[in-house]
Amino acid sequence: MSSSEDFRATTRDWLEANCPPSIRTPMVQDEIVWGGRNPVFKNPDSKLWLARMAERGWTCPTWPTEYGGGGLDKEESIILSQELRRINARPALTSFGISMLGPVLLEYANHEQKMRYIPGIVRGEIRWCQGYSEPGSGSDLASLSTRAELQGDFYTINGAKVWTSYADKADWIFCLVRTDLEVPKHSGISFILFDMASEGVSTRPIQLISGASVFCETFFDDVKVPAANLVGRLNEGWSIAKRLLQHERTMISSFGLASGQSDRGGTTSTVASLEGAAMHYRGDTDRLSDPVLRDEIAQFKIDSEAFAFTSQRSVEESKQGQGPNATSSMLKNYGCELNKRRYELLLKAIGSQALGWEGEGFADDELQITREWLRSKANSIEGGTSEVQLNVIAKRVLGLPDMLSMTRK
View: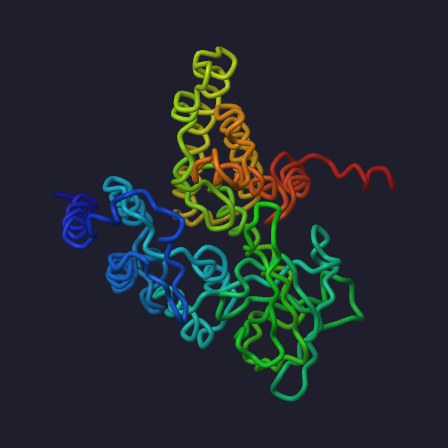
């Protein structure tokens, strides 16, 4: 038996013995495990599953064992993913620390910072949020104005962030701050980490049109942060910011996967299948008999399957050391548009039952679909607008000339 076959057999045996039956079912929104200082486990098996996976480092299987990761090589990591999919295992942990922060810490942080933060990310002990966008700095992120001034061994931070996902629930934040006002805007930015319980930090949830309050405004008033929390070199945080955005866009692209789970507005298990919706909400007419709707559903399923295979190929390429690149913009743009299409088709399939907001005459899942349809509209904004992604694709993937610079010549 080859080493890979031996690893697969060992992994399969371990999963059969350690993955509880309730974890081999589709994830539901209120059972997603975020971890943190005060974790919530609605399903007791989720706590057990996280503990067992974290003990092996398999919440972050390719990260070095030195920092608590699984230390698996590329082939082993792919096998583990395949075996988890085979038994339909739920993710043990959903974490911005895993999907965004951890990878850039491994690339840019010093050894002491890695030892301090990464094991806690692997074990789900700290819940992180992202401090990027500001009231006047959205797509033009580099124009941010949140200021960090060095005063002895501490930075004093003042400013505000907006659209900070789950800031009211997070323990720590990874934040972009301006540390030099005398240089071009991209050159005076630094990347820093600090505790959301620090004096001077406050949050205010933003209610969305869907009725949810996933995002927050976040305010910093003379917040004292140890200088040792600065990641990378002073004033060179823009490189880290761009790298992290590539990881974030890859994560957001999963909204386009039919089996994807929602952490900021993706598909959830409350959403019926397109065919099921068309057959169930038939009223006077069987909507699935509509050839136009059938064609749209069939085309969507084809596109969804193609996107799933493309996404999996990208994941496997990243495990072979190629890492995220401009391809993340392609996946993010297409995945978000695919997710929006799904909800548009669901509304067509449900018909007038998709017009409810509250009150009698509408089931809970119908009201949920209406809200998630509204929420899906933001997919093309978060993590960089679709226009930003198309510019990245044009320049970095297709190699098209910069028309603005050509005009100036």
